[in-house]
Image 1: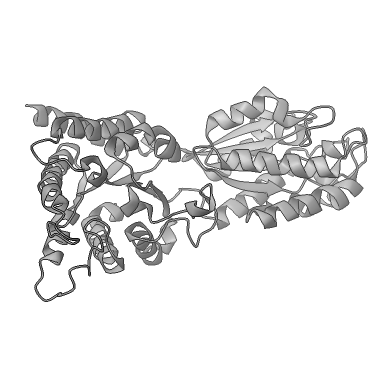
Image 2: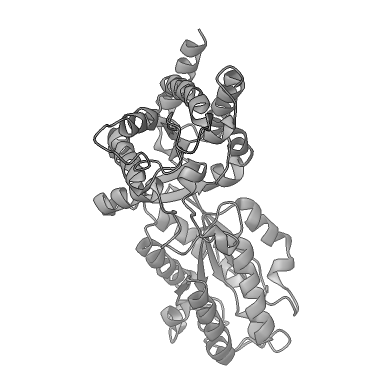
Length: 445
């Protein structure tokens, strides 16, 4: 009865998600700036500010919010620092996927200009935004040209002060710099009569310039699938070079780690370049199903994935035998993760990978491998039952790895798993191949 009930609920979820493509969580874009972003001097900023026009360009799969605040500056010293406003906290609470920053115009006023503070404040904002659970892509905009110097705002400091600092920060942080200045320089027809604030046509130029850069990075009008891998060290693969401290999200040599998750991403991205599929690795070495549940909101839901692949279980066992292990609690926690996700976004699809280990004794007379194997085997059965209830794809890595390590033609007993748990490069390749084969229909839809 329980399985029938789960199947009924899941079917309802899937029917609803098929009825409307809008069920997916939109890609969130935060436009951070001053009165130019807000749309001052534009008759209808709600419809004609640059963020409003960017929304129309991006389309219904995006939510573009205007976080422009009149007279605000980037520097922490001066008359109106942006980062000291509640609006900045609102930006962070929004958990954006994309942040477009366009500040600096008001920093050129005599009472505000402090190049060192401008630089340090800008770097701090980038750091804080990068540290958000949603790990947004960040774009830095050169301020628009100043056609008429007014209120102390001047073109010289925009060109000689703000732009070089922003360019250096973009280069250092491996970020895109969007040249709004070049798009507006010498174009008085794009400005209101004060020569500082763009009019609706000028806002259109800004929106189209930002949109062009976002499009070059795979955004809009319909975003590609977001596929996220969650799990323990087998998934982790040292993604984001954690040995160097905080994991980074911009070094594409290491952003997906080195294992089956990276191999799957490489296969998909090479096979379907036109689909702009984005991959995220959120495996954490040593994690358990309970640990996964604790960080689920921060590391998974905040990314708004369309497909979630889970490989978890081996760390839950420790030294337990099948007689000692609480399979009921383990299954309940696993199911709760899926339930929570579907409550958040009913269109998310799941790929459930069965954990694995070898039953062979690899080191000395330690019998941990023999005790562990029946527990992992039962976990694999449970995961298949869960997958049936939730219409999820199963990647039966347990059966495959069992078959590989039992192959008499391979005499090196460490060839596929070097310690009985962690795959070798060859083992990761086999898991990736099975993942790609198992998800073929899902990825085509």
